[in-house]
Length: 188
Image 1 (tube, rainbow, N blue to C red):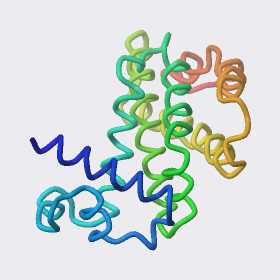
Image 2: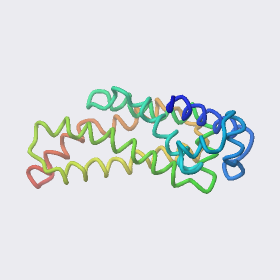
Image 3: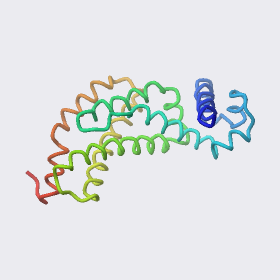
């Protein structure tokens, strides 16, 4: 029942975001739209930003399900773009409000998880420390999220498939090269 209530609160928030900005939405607005009382809201979430964060995490989990390997990371990244675009009113509203940092943190978290799985898979062939693998995933995370934030700032006009294709061309073989460089301590 808890997950059903959380999803209903999420749907109410997204519905309200079609009508007004996040900073004008109250918990009372959400609970009225959802048909529950305020205490039920607080049973599940600390505040509206907690609900926003949970909603972003749920969207990310669905987008990346089964797409976190070296051969599927492009599909996973495309799924992130598509999940963001499907929730465009929600993302744009949250991004343009006082919680822009939440959108960025969501994207960093999701992208890092995807990349870390890819790096770990590729690292099975190389003896590389956990801190070096983490560094590689963080490095690429900032590049990927930077591209995505530019796309969001551009009102999501560019084609996500074309963006991911360009990233894929740039990245071809880079994970393996980076891991090998960290293992040997030199660049090729």
